[in-house]
Image 1 (cartoon, rainbow, N blue to C red):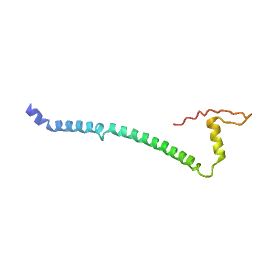
Image 2 (image 1 turned 90 degrees about the vertical axis):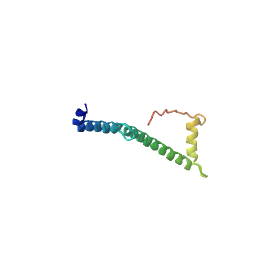
Image 3 (image 1 turned 180 degrees about the vertical axis):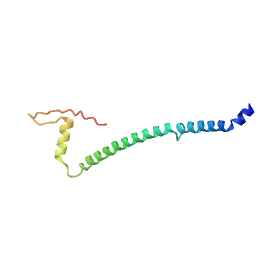
Image 4 (image 1 turned 45 degrees about the horizontal axis):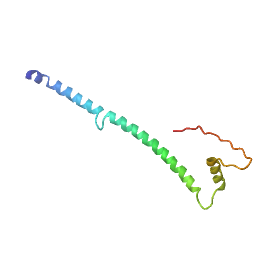
Amino acid sequence: MVRLIKRNYFLLISVFLIFYFSFNLVSGERGLFSYIEKKDLLSNLKKEEFLLTNQIKDLDFKNSLLNDNLDLDYIETLIRERFLFGKINETIYIIKNNDTKN
């Protein structure tokens, strides 16, 4: 048995090293599976950053409308949309918006 191991020493070491490096290539903290998970996490965070940036821009615009000089047309539009407020003998049409963007 010892003679067989001595004769195939290089082969055994080579096989062991190949298994070791291939196992570490696909598993572990810096392996292939971890890379794929981190790549998905990065794309999700980029989407979230884009949505939050758009929300900030929208809130900045709405905040800019809240100053000493009120835009009465904008306020009237908000009242009509939110409270379905109208004048006497005025017909109000409700349009349902089906645009769903993710």
